[in-house]
Length: 302
Image (cartoon, rainbow, N blue to C red; front, side, top):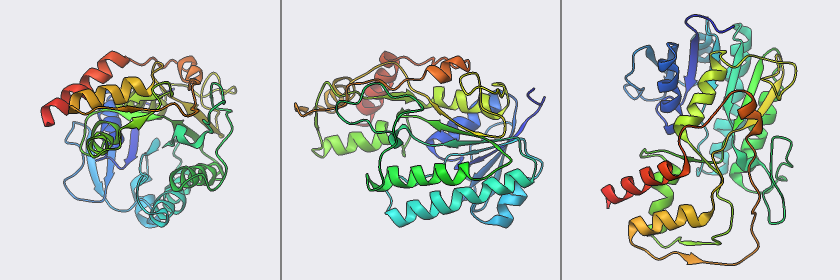
């Protein structure tokens, strides 16, 4: 059962996903400990208290997790040099996990990525049991896979690895609403229009994370019914089917540039979110709404 007022620690609380998670938790009347590195950067929301520090510091991790019911980890410096991704993800994130376990925290929810899965041309639909990419596939998937594995080795916790694909939602640090469109404007405008573009809106992603963290989604013996108590359970979270024609076409049109369509072999399967839906998750933002939000944001900034 979820506690009347669950206490949830959120790392990276000032990021795109972290902010949305804090907001979703506040809507669920949780007490949120928002962990940030810079004072004054946590979301200003009722029930959210800022905690400034480094979650990879054992003393701080133990201090901030004391008396908490759940921990949500959202930090991974995508696009940074490999050594930085390794230090923050593979070495840093697992520090807070044993601190949480020793504090009696019930659940650890880690924002992983669907980018750990092999989605090469010819691979069909992908779910939680899909093949992971081999070592050497890139700094980001390599370090995300290693982080997931390190967290799975921490016993005594119910750990959920949430695996989203492209995350849509407005924000200065948003890859798909801000950074990738900037790259398209700069000439990175090539794609096979038939390639699958798996996505989820940040608000829907945050809703699932908040429901897992607060215990609204109960544990179960079968991962298809809920997080496995005391184990590590991956869960894919994705919106309705879309292609690169949908995404790049929207961005290019909003920016007034011409996309360059290619015809190389690409992945055309689907990312299956059946497990999340069986847990009771239903996305509220459909593709048309998400692309309209994206288009309006790009037009306003042009």
